[in-house]
Length: 107
Image (tube, rainbow, N blue to C red):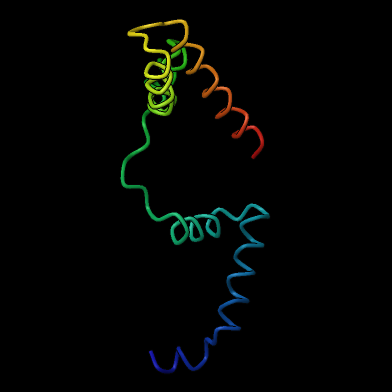
């Protein structure tokens, strides 16, 4: 370890990272995987299989959108003192879904 630390200085390590970033940008899957592992960590859950995702899209259900919309819906309910207004809930949910879609499209 001492020999390795003597040879791989911070400057050398920065060069390695820069080269890895350049390789990842040019399509090197191993470089992207290495960077992702260190920057994002390994996923703690498995990705869903395609069928449930397709069913959710067809049915219009989106758990992420529902979870993000819930606080806004609750604030709206409290502010307007309504027990249930499906039209307003749908409008708020649609606005949040559109905002998420716009943000994904920007990237």
